[in-house]
Image (cartoon, rainbow, N blue to C red):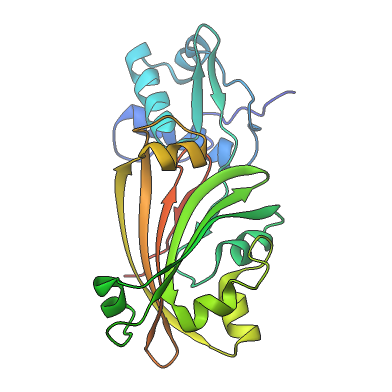
Length: 249
């Protein structure tokens, strides 16, 4: 396949380091589809000749794109364009299957645990339940195109958990069940995101090595009336899935 070359004068020069201009021009070609996933990028020598810069400058530009996840390196063969990662928009309160199905992905949830916790003081408090009431724990592995992307642990009051236990949680989204079937409209969610190392159980479920860095998303979802409904901990792989968020000033 012949790749159209963007001449140096096709993009107005911008102030800043040379490597940044090369990085930005290559990024435009990748995002616009001029370079297809798994396609080899021009060699370092070709880029040096094209941009009339040093090898260090070219390597810095390529290194930046590799850090962004747009390129990956194959030893002895060069740089290749990465396959775009599926993503979920955190700015919208949606269940995983609800969000991914809209993009045409095949979604499957594997239920790996359903427990009723009679004594869970902290969980009871965060869910706004009366002291002493049991809490339901749902443990699911979310698969996208038959590949595990997250291990989700959800906590909710047993009055909802006992009903959800009878539902088809492998193919149905919990949020849609709450709203469309139980008539409980969702309002908003509070999120906290950090990075952790995968423990043995999580690594096995996500098919990654133990102690691999993963994202942990804590999400407390409230109903439209402001009452807390579901507390979730989402343990997500970073190599095949990502979250995105637009923030307005």
